Length: 198
Image (tube, rainbow, N blue to C red; front, side, top):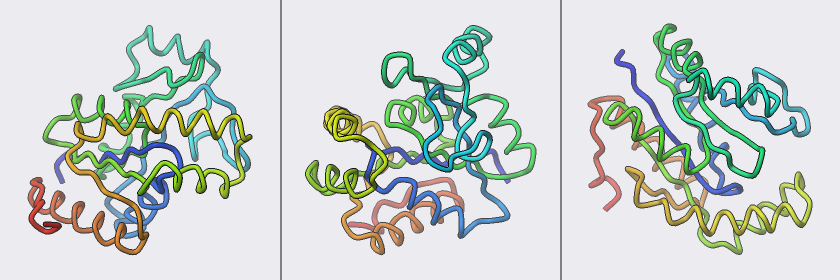
């Protein structure tokens, strides 16, 4: 199989991880989740090497100096996220397609880096209010952090046109079907068949 890449990006609370996990469940033997590195602290039950590679800010900065990242972003001051080159090599060496669940700027950078080898999908909530409601219901962030994420989401929406496809996650069943078709078409022939959704 060619070294193909699937990139899913979205503002926080858009349902990105749910969709990514659904796609992964359909391709258990040929697709692998790219684990991002981050300098933020683990949340809840998160573990190093499973949800993220948790690094200190100093470790992250050192790896940047050593050119160890495909892409990275300082999402908030002192809080980095990035994709290690070694992680891509690990997945491709296993003969798998890489699937990314990354922030919006990371998604844009990955598409630039991988070009036609990548399908980039921007997932968005139907509205900012729905997004705020989802973040509140998730119960993992303080009210201040939620408002920070909502403000960031409004800014991130502007990046949507830089993706191959924009998927509005209004109804999860529909979003699953839409994402399945996009991925299937891309893996079959490497081209996007937008007519499916017109």
